[in-house]
Length: 412
Length: 144
Image 1 (spheres, chains in turn brown, red):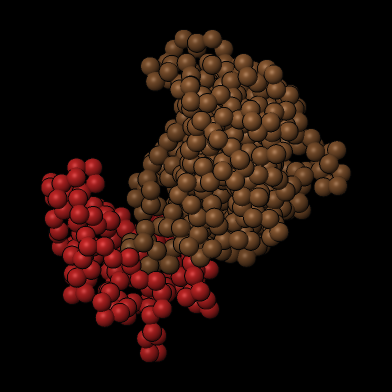
Image 2: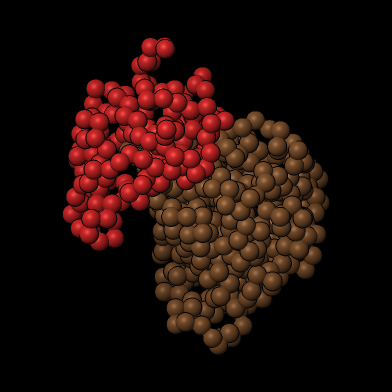
């Protein structure tokens, strides 16, 4: 761990303070038409505070995201006011699907800077039930250029499709590889108490599904859902007096390759741009892909985790499809991936649920068998100690990744 | 040959810096923005990305190669409801830049190319589709 460039050493210095996640929470997911956006955020805050065994008055920082329903340019302070908080640190992060890991990084930096000690990171929305037309436009604008892309009838799904088809062309990837991601994650979602889609589907089921935009069938696409999730970032010292075993953030990394898909240089450059996030997070953590026990990888589409697995160095270029087809991503496989079902089968809240699931895995709490009212099952990876998780905003434009560990970072 | 239907699809957002491009399109001239070294780029901006030099313009051939495409079975809005699938493509122009477009069957600018007739690497050429009195869209059709 002594090696590393000055910037990597600086990241280790910060995380060496024992920056950790001391509580997590998630609501039911799906169609929740009887609750508003701020209500969902507050509901999940209560769950998360309970998980950590602390009161709202113990929280001195808040990091939120954005809402497609409740439009405000001051989201974090609007929520703080709604909940009756007077936080010493507040920020709203808005980088699409990269937002959740960036919220954790923002909280860590606030703690390092002495601005707060216990930071609530919370995101949620009633996107499915309550989206406004301006919210819809904002969502589309995030993905396509208003003059030189949108007028050609591009959808977000098709934007990913453009990159996916080129990836499949260059590496001779069969359609079955994409379907295998969906089938694998459907097995995991069947066990997760709050997953929207609980049925197990086969590769053939996905292949026979209706087309949305090539190479994606409906089942290759992520869900649109209502719901909320949260986590509390603090220091090892503060976490000691809390209820749960802390999960340490031992690696952070970011990568950017393009904003609009027309601007993406090549499959290789996109893989490298998003891959930098994961590779750097692992470098800061002082680990290699072989050390990982579980991977919660952003999965906006079935193709998305394939290029991320390659970018992070977990698989070689063009090899992730076979890797998934061989069963390596399944529970019981070499590196179980998206053990909660992911955006494709559980719910879409950016990467929030990926972080929550990684924390539950590293605490040994990913067994939902006791949740009989939700027909939960056991999706725990036995003895999981190290996880990687990431989120990507835009069409694989901006990526943020975290390495999470059940053990504190070793001395630099 | 059927009569060309009224255009109901989204039109480009127009900013002052885009006027030169769309005015040329209206005259069925395809031009590309360039930086101060004469290197063309896409998409048009007042200042060239990277160098931030003032943009100049060059005449372009309108010839290119399909880098990738996605056949859309569902469009982005109600305006596409009931339409046959449309093919959004990224085309590598002979001059270098890559641009997004839609692939069409013939020089009238509509209807969509048949999904069975597209493949990565195929040569395409520009079609000027006067969708309104003000806007001419750069669409592409198989070359030769």
